[in-house]
Length: 329
Image (cartoon, helix red, strand yellow):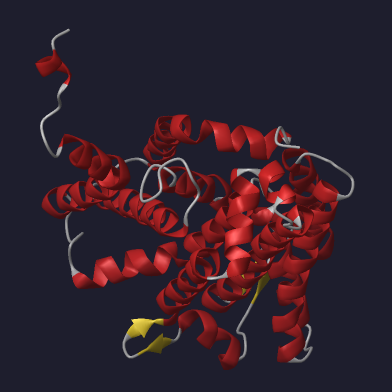
């Protein structure tokens, strides 16, 4: 090979880096253009705002899953924990208990499950894949035990409904919650010492431990935050829908995981990151809405979602394997 053949044109590395980091963002933009041209009313302001409102629940759950994955742990319990927290909130509010208690209960339940997951992983040394599957099953059973399989339905106090149905300066409050949660999570991870310790724990646990970082504490924190955001989403779901069912968050599990996997292909390729997760959430939201407007059968959404997971998991396989089976321990 000649010397000339080994010289790449100036700027090639930069272009490759841009495509690697932002290729998925460009794909999202192309997807939006595609549906704007082919899906009736997709690009209307009302529909775009509706898409953002619809993905708000998914985004908060996905950010929680991201925070767990940042410390190289999986949380597969968040959807069931969210459902259980929601029916606990419904039982209290429809039972006439004080609103403050009804709002505090799902947050406490989510945080409690998250802390238990963290202790199971760090103290009992159970891989997070197994631990969170088990606690998710417990939460699912508890939700059905509490409700008997029947949803709580009825008019809730206006203060509760405002959390999920209100608006601020014309912007749905759910969209505001989504932005606030994502912004706070990004600030913690990238703007604080605590976040730096979480990142170090997820990237190189042994090196982080040698540097004096309390690795076990970081793992408990990541899983606790995931649980807390599951409980927070329960509050917003009940407020928005004025109902509480034992399976109301079931469909969010695979979609949230898919959003995080998509997010790991952009912004910080190969790493879980909050901005990337939001890109993934928006892509899934746009796909779902656009396919519905185009009249695609409901099962097409599942086929497309599965294809997206397969396409994005390759880049993140190493992190997922370590998180699922505790191979870093």
